[in-house]
Length: 76
Image (cartoon, rainbow, N blue to C red):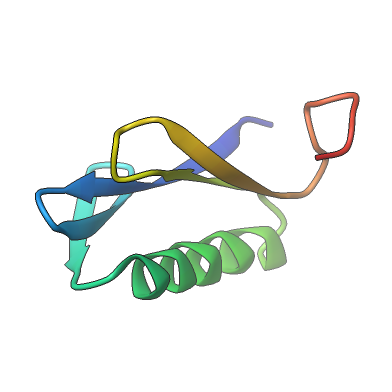
């Protein structure tokens, strides 16, 4: 089973949640992360594997949240 990836992306002072082809804008990062995590949990609760990737304002990756089996061998 493939993992469904949801991204929280910086967008010129706003934040976007990209879930497949769908994108939604949010005024702040915390709201965007909360929405992305809720979507990922819903996928996991439905029996799927999901992951949220969070970007910093500078474009580098900050955090990931994995729901289901983690593909990494180490914690963190």
